[in-house]
Amino acid sequence: MRAYVIAAAALSLALSACVSKSKHQTEMDSLKAEIQKEKTEVQSLNAEKAKLQDTLIASAKDRGQLKTSLDEMKKAMAEMRERQAEQRKRLKEFEDLTARFKKLADTGALTVQIIDGKMVVSLGSDVLFGSGSAKLSAAGMEAIKEVTNQLKNIPDKRYQIEGHTDNVPIATAVFPSNWELASARALNVTRAMIDAGMPANRVSAASYGDTSPVKPNDTPEGKAANRRIAIVVVPDLSTMPGYDELNKMGSSN
Image (cartoon, rainbow, N blue to C red):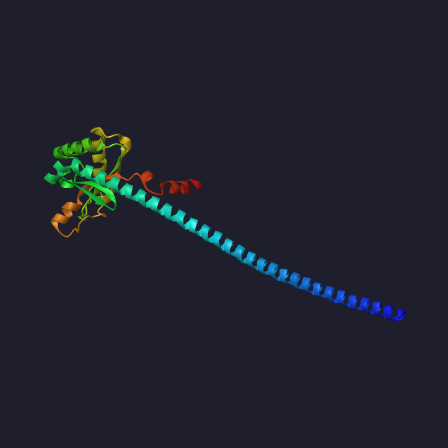
């Protein structure tokens, strides 16, 4: 009987040990499964993190590109506003110049035009000089004085006085070609303007001979239009958009 009890107790212990071992294994398996699950979740989270980082990098790049584009657009708009302001300013100056010379323009003594983007007051040489001569006539001298009285009172403006002829050749001891005739006429008008009160540092002279006609030379009217003195308002480049950048580029060379 005692032996039976001992055997039963031993069997009970063995069964208990088996149950404990089985339960432990189950718990271990469950724990491993949990660990594996967590590893998988960690990997998934790392993948999401990497994806998010890529998205953030791309977004930052897009923001950078967008900012660059926005800055460029702002710069372009600012330059456009500067050009528009400059155009309005030049239009006002042209209207003012036209108004100043309306009386002379109405008589046909001169014209006020925009030529190659520059404001030009043109006087016919037939009004100012005798044929083949560079000496100002009395009427020409009066016309230059009247023009100078208007131009000298426009502040901060410089003028280039250009001599132009028609295409009829000239060959004299004084004027071997139209270049010399146009040059002498431009210089004499420049001197007359200085004598009439124009500061000498605001005027210069140039000769174009017969190289810059405003009309064809195949009619008497065309030839007359080409024989002229052109007083060109020298543009102030410092007011033009982009001048500072160009000036810096020139200074760095």
